[in-house]
Length: 323
Image (cartoon, rainbow, N blue to C red; front, side, top):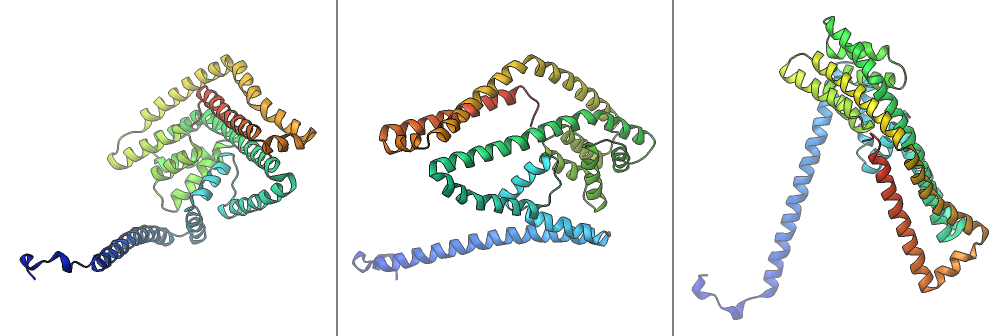
């Protein structure tokens, strides 16, 4: 059929719709195949890495690490594990998953006991309180690790000057380090013995625990592995920088102690007052919720409280050396 023989009267809309559906199915199938190929390539690379480590020995540890990596593919579970690990816990991902399931099962029970409004407040306060405790413990642990890093790097520098490799110097320095730095770098040493590159393991550790100084060490190790060179000057500069920053941070915390305490009081008092009023008169908020004006007032008050807490938290975080 030539273009001159085309007749609009013979134009069939059903045929066009069928072609469009076929093209859509073909495109969807192609996209699905591309996604599957990407996932297969990622799984294949992980499998090859595990096989290489199995050939090097330590099969039980390699199998355990492979199982942990498979579990940590879930973004929610990975985020929860990172929060728990930053606080100093060595819980496995399956244990963290069980705790998350238990906490999730307790949410509807709390809503049934306290009602929709009261249960939401209780659940929100419990989650905020638990997260605050874990974050506070993680901040203290991170500060202690950073405080111990100069002595660790000095010990590793002495071993490096004796002619040992970077992996050996870190393993020997970790054996002489106190808590909590010791288990952190002992875990790094175990992963290195299983065949993982030192710079990659240090980068993952820095990302999990949010310690920039370990990230600097990983970058130095990566450059040293690829291009060679001496790490002594890098370690000396890093030691001096950590000690100078620690002195400045201590002075800043002393200057802002009163301001941070006032901010904490301002964040806690409204929530505590809301809980007190609810416990003294349970029908007070229920009656407000039944009225249109009261409902708008409650929603605006909660939104303003959350916004105020976020602003205060950002102001407090700006005075600390966290992430």
